[in-house]
Amino acid sequence: MKRQIISFVLLLTVSYLTAQNASDALRYSRIFYGGSARFQGLGGAFGAVGADFSVTATNPAGIGLYKSAEMSFSPSLFINHSISDYNGTNGTDTKGNVGMGNLGLVFSIPSSTASKGGFRGFTVAFGVNRQNDYNSRVTMEGNNKQSSILTDFTNKLNSFPGGISPNMINDQYPFDIGLAYGTDLIYADSASNSYKSDFDVAPPAQRAVYQRKSVSSHGSINELNLSFGANYEDKLYFGATIGIPFIRYFETSQYQEFQNDTSIHYFRSLTYDQSLETHGTGINLKIGVIYRPANWFRIGAAIHTPTYYGNMRDSWNSQMTAEIAYEKNTITTNYQESPLGTYDYQMTTPFRAIGSIAFIIGSYGLVSGEYEYVNYNQARFYDSSNGYNDLNKEIKAKYTSPVNVRAGTEWRIQNFRVRGGFGYYGSPYQSGIKTGEKYLVSGGLGYRGKHFFCDLAYIWSQTKDDYYFYDSALVNPSHNIYTAHSVVATFGVRF
Image (spheres, rainbow, N blue to C red):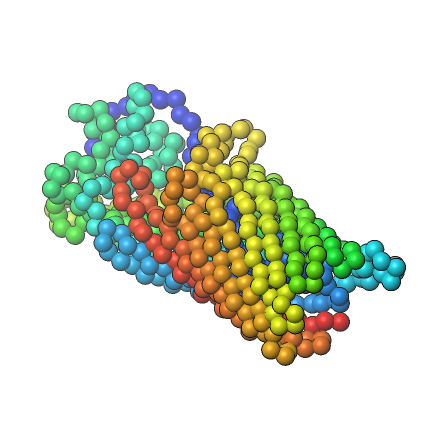
């Protein structure tokens, strides 16, 4: 059933080469700090507390409170459970992994003039803190009587002024529309001088397909932290960190459409598989200060420069399989795959500022809190051809600065500790959209000996997000809820 085609003339662009989008900028800019079990047990509200290696990633002035050398590591277990609701049909999925919250070494160096006042000591620390865990899987499915992904494809082809020649479709869209054209899912109709699909030409009452999409991701951002801290008069603490984050992100997805009956001529099903792999290394500087006007009160502040990723690289490819009944009771399977796409580019993530306070309640415990400022519309992509102007404008228009707050408490029972924490990360989107909000609740226990300590924390978090299979003007979103469960243990020695 090869359709008769009509040619058009078109000057083509190479926009498909730059596969990055605004969601990529948000993914690598939005940080949910990992770290030690003590740090996470307090909800990450550690900016004014200090004396934990995790603060090298938030407020490095905290390492100035160390009085001795320390080595620690924090293995973790992460499980993400998803629930989806697409057009009234629910789906569930789960994915987990074992990782490392952090690994750090701290050296405390007393000042030779400490007895005379001034600087009491200096601290050097280095190690790795986890900033993001991307392990997740979601399955979304349901009936759709309004559109097909093929509707989106034909709309794009028909939107070209003057049209696009069929023999140029694969050059222009080798990773999506070209596959659909090559597998005979869309065709050029000479009578109407337009591109169509079997879904488009079916009577409105018969336009119905069952759609399913599964998206699985894994990877992380781990940051190497090289830090220096200082203690002045046990009142003022300074710190700085050179951060070198490493991005490893992998995503695979499978989109399917089925016809459960024969109301649509020819078309029976399609399967569209995509894979993406991203690697990058960045650099940033973090500077912090903590002031202790009284033994019971501390106030802290830190600024993080934008992270510059100078060697980002994406690799991606896709495949499409179509089942078509060219003849009654006979199904033909067509298959086509894309070339391997690669692209090198640069990226910067936004500036950050963190303000924090802590109340020290004698030898009994503490209460802490902090506020983080970050404006996600400051993220930017760059390449040698200045090909990201439109995407950077989209990022600027789409995202905003949300409310990000964290709070925590710790109580002492002889050598043991009991902890609790809370975090709220507001929606990063403009126009009052609440999708993307994240809530976090944590709790933990700890033991502190003279030379050995260990901690255990459990972290529950939940995010709600809307996912569109294709153009949001054509399809309803899948309302997804992601619930993560993390268990982190920290083991450390002082010397």
